[in-house]
Image 1 (cartoon, rainbow, N blue to C red):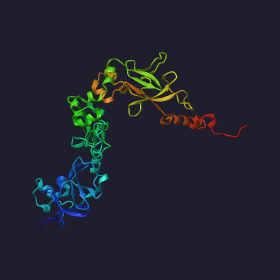
Image 2: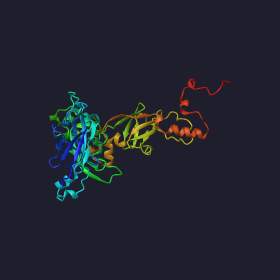
Image 3: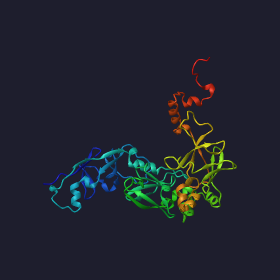
Image 4: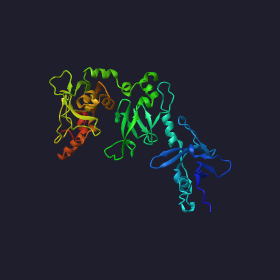
Length: 408
């Protein structure tokens, strides 16, 4: 007895599955065959096959990789299960199991393709990526792609990152990799498709081509150099500010501006030294070691602008905001002076600079009190002391403060 043929429904049109030839034959006469070889293979949690379909003509549509214009609304994306799940009997027969088809579990014999509007589809994401403008002639171009352990990533030289195709939020910065001159090394988590974390247990070291090798056109746009000028150049030579590097290697210390006053970044002295203020103790990194932000990139420091130095806060009994003190955000040592940091630690100079960046001048950000937990601590202290005047009321000038009762 001949088994029932597997059918696929694409937007209401039924096709018979021909797994041997990777074709879908329309049941209705006069319609065109759907060629599964023109579908894109996708793998996330499971294998899927993605194609495109014209609802008006009821036929398959194939788009090139460099498509930049959205197709009309009657073009949709369809998603089918993997070939093994599409026709399990035929799959097993094609892959060595020649037993009686009647004794093989037929699985599902009628599939309904998932239909996705183009603006929400994989093709839509491709088109969005392809429309990133070329800053020279303002024409869109398709960004190059690389494959990492079976997963496709888009190379974005402008952002100095790679990001997983069709999952743009899953990105890896080149600064997170280990720079090796001609290439990068990446500890790749095979489960999350991202950089290794503390919780990773399925990691493989992979080699990533340099940005200039992966996308010379993008590097040309980024640096303003011609393709010819990029030949035999490394990412380090093209990206790092040569003037800043020359200054630092000649012995000139980086400077960070804090509330308008310049400080020298002196890692040998383990401190930020205020310029032209020899009476100040400045800011010693040992004093602020426990004031780092959760991301490990900054310190939040209580700073005395009048005396140009760090001032430790004792908030245990405070019932008002500290006077003549501000909170400033200072990058950690490796970001302030990667050259000095590499020398002190014996690290590779180029790799350290590519990871942390290089600048000879930066400006510290003043952190608003509202971004800190200090107002909450003061409010707690006030409640403990049964003081009900809130912080914002106390900060207003006297003439703007609300009357608390009748005048005497």
